[in-house]
Image 1 (cartoon, helix red, strand yellow):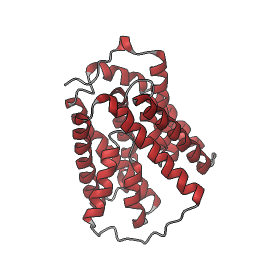
Image 2 (cartoon, one colour; image 1 turned 60 degrees about the vertical axis):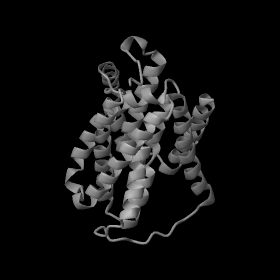
Image 3 (cartoon, rainbow, N blue to C red; image 1 turned 30 degrees about the vertical axis):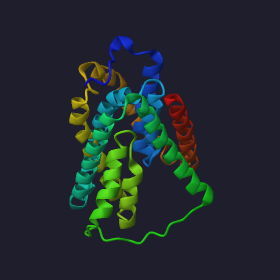
Image 4 (cartoon, rainbow, N blue to C red; image 1 turned 120 degrees about the vertical axis):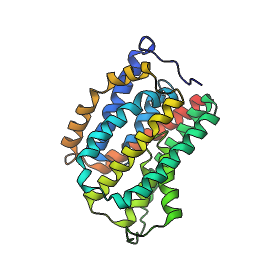
Length: 261
């Protein structure tokens, strides 16, 4: 089944502009801020198209971006810690793809909007209530399989529609890994997960020769985002920035839900 019908001729200036900004923003997020701010990209593009098109044009840019960043952190990856996480995430991707085929396309906007709204509300609620959570340090060699598969599988599932950092960060944080190892683990986890999506979305008909040409037009936004992300990392306060991004997620999520009716 072919989910989308998109060609170079059908691409509007607005769609291309929003998609370029989305790729730039994800590159900036990965290079300068990390966290969940990159989750804004997929729903943003979906507001000027649909979730199928957003996945088709953004995923190829993600996998290329991930290769460069993963190579940078290759010497800091705890592979013994990573492999069960990655397997769980891939299982989550497969489940998401199955769900994707069962949901009628017009309801996908509602699903994406609900996920965006939930992320925004959760972040803002925690900040407004100053809720603190005591985290007990765990041994990275321990295998809590239910927790491991549940949280990392949830990240694989949600990353099919957004970026999915929240569950995997909940899994990693208690281990109190050194900062560079923490970042390397996240980078490699999502690199593996995003590459695992490629054959799945091709099989679903989401990535075609036509959509790859459109993705190619978005690649130049990557180096600018990475460069600016590195530049502003130490100059812009992160907490206000995160708050603003999650307010935007609330607004975009609400719009997508409204649009689905």
